[in-house]
Image: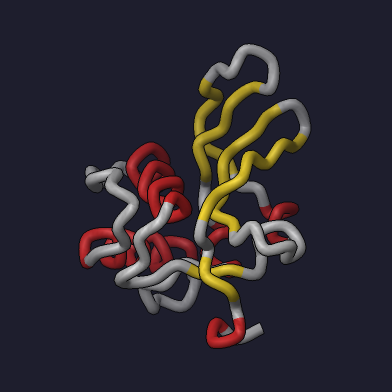
Length: 123
């Protein structure tokens, strides 16, 4: 599905999987799971904040977690896309989200477990 027909990720949701969970950008508009939304330059919403947290925690960026998709967030996304072998357009979308690592926590106790991928969320 081309990005031009995808909805904007305007929020985030908790995604549980196999005794652990993460938070993923979502559009909260009834689209299936998290696969049908994008984030890009100029977006300002909680979904951007979740993305910035993942970029900081799992990839070592030192972004301001201000929920604003500015030039620094775009550059970080482009760099991660390069590392993951995804089209380097600086826009977060399903292909990037599926391959990215996300901060992961235990369902019991909310203990940080590290970073992992959640490809099932983007099926």
